[in-house]
Length: 331
Image 1 (cartoon, rainbow, N blue to C red):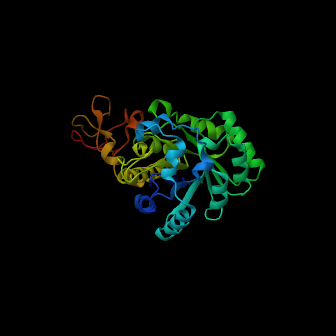
Image 2: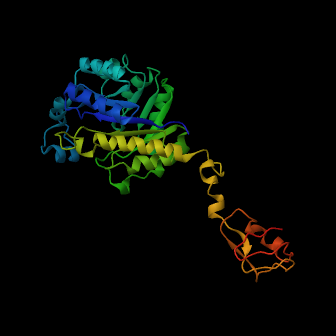
Image 3: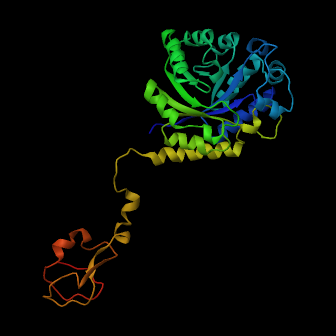
């Protein structure tokens, strides 16, 4: 199995502080993630003054501000992303950021080789066209969308020249109730569209992304933070560094465990064959020349003698020597 691409989603969990953003880069690298991802936007181009926060954002922030007010506190300037991209390069982890407006697409095009499109932009035709016209690979999240909406977005991306497209199954509630995850929808997406698929997770904990890998996810995206108790809209539904490291480690173990599907006796278990299996043995003391029968034979460990699968062949033959009780039968 190929290695699962693990995206550590820092998002806006830096709270607008470049130093916190760099600490998130360090933690993503330490955890073993392949990519650390941020979000790039100009607040006034992303949302109108009229747009309200999502309920989970209101709950987490304890306010009822507009989206614009919230985003102004979370935005990093373009110069900060140039600094972050350089920092990621020095640390040894791939930098990625999701653009949320046309100007940010143009900016990020010069510093990254792949696009990550968030679920909220899947019906944004002009946005999809701009992304596609860069001809770079695209990872598209599909939260809040129907199969038709996914199909429509794919058609736009393909028609306008996007590179390889991967689709991430996703539920866009923070946190996502386990009953709404529907991991099998990821397989439906793969079967319907023939794309590489993955899973962008917003559940609490690490079980679901691990299960997604077992079901065939080739990309995993998961929010993380330095501390869930920090003030901000996404911290509470994010992993802390130690949990991110546990998730990455578990995914790598699952990858090893999936194997190639061929059923074989492995080298590690071969030594236990004779210990765990049984052989045909003497049930009682048997004299040479005595007929071997169900009365004087049984099966017991170890498995180093005649296999019990030869039972019908052994029954009715003549003992070639004296056998003590429990002794392995020989013919």
